[in-house]
Image 1 (cartoon, rainbow, N blue to C red):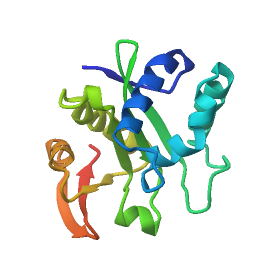
Image 2: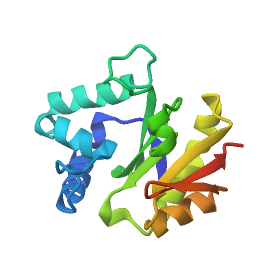
Image 3: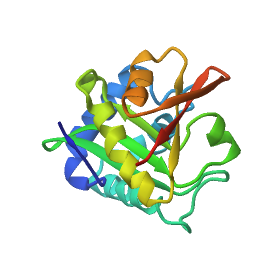
Length: 179
C-alpha cells in the first residue's frame, strides 16, 4: 500500500497530475488557507519546467532545516510524499514544533491525498508511517486536526490511536501517541 518517500524530481509528471486534480476541486484558490493551497499559489507557475520543479523539491527538503528561510510564524517541517509505485498519491507534512496557531489548527501532522487516490487507505498509511518520524523528532504525542465535517479524516486519525481533545473554531483536535 504505497510508501512514504522524500520528494524527488523523478515524480514530476505524476505530481503535476495530482496537483491538477487538487486544482479541479478548488485547491489553490484565494480562499484555500491550507498549506497545499499556499504552495499551489506560490509555485504552480514554476512546476512546468524541470528546473523550476527541481527548485521546488529543494525548497521542500530544505524546510526541515532549522535555519531555512520561511515566512514569519512558520516552523521547520519534514515534507514527505506517498508514492504508489512511481506515482504521486499524496503529501504529508510533519511540523517539528507547534506555534499557538498550529495548536488551534494544523497540528504537528497534516496530509492530503489526491482525489483519484482517495478511499484506498493512503491517508491511514501515511499517518501511521508519520508517527515514528514524529517520534524521532522528539514529539511524544502529536496534535492532529481536521475539519468537524471531515468524517474520513476523523476515521484516519482515530484508526491511528487519536483521542479527541476538543473542538475549536470548526476544527477537531486530536492527540495521537507516536509510540
